[in-house]
Amino acid sequence: MSSFTLLDLSSRAINPDYHDKSRDIETALAWNAVQKTLVSMGRSELWKYIKSVKLTDKNIVITTGKPIANAEIKIYSEQILSRLNESLNQIKILNREKVIFK
Image (cartoon, rainbow, N blue to C red; front, side):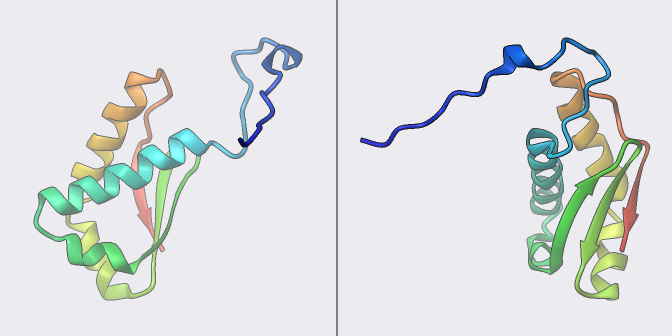
C-alpha cells in the first residue's frame, strides 16, 4: 500500500493575488486545448512537433521543433485560444489574450 502526504493548504495566506508558479492545472488545460483543437481539425499529426505549451499572465506560448509546424498550427490559433479560455473560465481563471509561437 502506498502512502502519500496531504498538502497543508491552511498554511497559505488567503490572498486572491496568490500565484502558484507551477500552475499544473492551467498548463494541463492548455495542453488539452491544443491537442483537442488539432484532433477536431483533423491535424493530429502536428501534435508530435509540439515541444512545450506554457502560460504567461496574458498569453499562451507554444514551442515547436520546426518553423513549418508553427505556420501550420498558427492557422488554428483562434480555436486553440477559444477552447483554452472556455476551460479557464470554468475554474475562474483569467483569460489569455493571444497565442505566441516559438
